[in-house]
Length: 163
Image 1 (tube, rainbow, N blue to C red):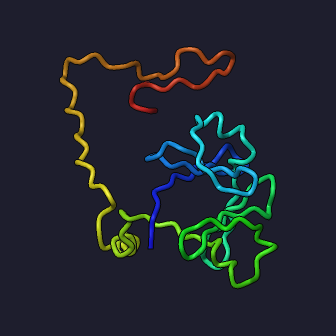
Image 2: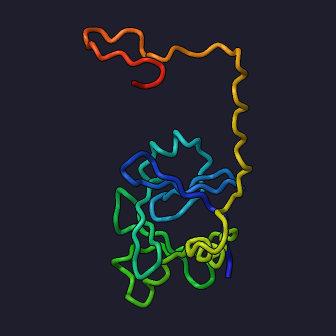
């Protein structure tokens, strides 16, 4: 089993995805019917319709297809070679070649579950907040009447005791 470190990022609010390899500094794009890596800036990749993908969730797996051609899926055979035909022209047996699973190697499901159950402290334990020292007796107090101008809204003035 081979893993590739790819970064999947969204483009705006329309859920179009860019697939980027930070190691190679390339974006995954289609060139005719082939998958290729292209050295583009993010701005350039967002403008290329052959580099924008949509994500589908099917049977617990992720599938990625080209935005401009919904029959163009990212898929690989057993040897890791790219599948060049569209999904509709493949038999049902090969449809699992288009399914992927995202992995987070630094995620611990047991720690996550015990945190949700309330047995452990949250992910980070923050230091206790220090309270301000009490003001000295001859410190200058802020005005107790609040806002100076109400611009036409006359409110009952309160003295410093709140009455």
